[in-house]
Image 1 (cartoon, rainbow, N blue to C red):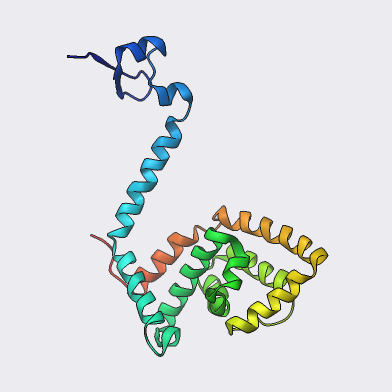
Image 2 (tube, rainbow, N blue to C red; image 1 turned 45 degrees about the vertical axis):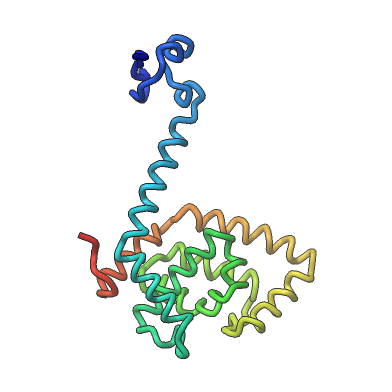
Length: 202
């Protein structure tokens, strides 16, 4: 039977030849990427837990109601609209930045999202969203209509000099939002539970 020894840093069992060659360390610890491996494991565990959560089930129900009913978003209660708009905002910005939020169908929920951030007292996120809106649309209202909104965005993008400046501004706003200054996702979850949109997991 092969003798295995614990890594002197993480405790994982490793072959004795590896231990001898690496001064008692496993390869991830010796290579300096153990922390990344552990963080990846932690994220996978969180994702698996979320997939089974009441919040995930509630979100899927909202998506179905919005996209598979004639009334769509308007059929949701005010609290559901706030939660849905903010979750769309978070998902879009983390996936592709503020420009993606405004250029996709989620941009129709800008007004609800900006009011929702104020209601949740997520004031830094509120400021970032309004700054992104002003960078792209100036003093104009954000059109709810998808085609009209994207036509305005195309006008901005066609001005190469202006968009170079605006693009850099949006990049900075994206990074600030990604830093989660208000822990917005946690705020949304607490809001939904407090308003009785779904029950807290046991």
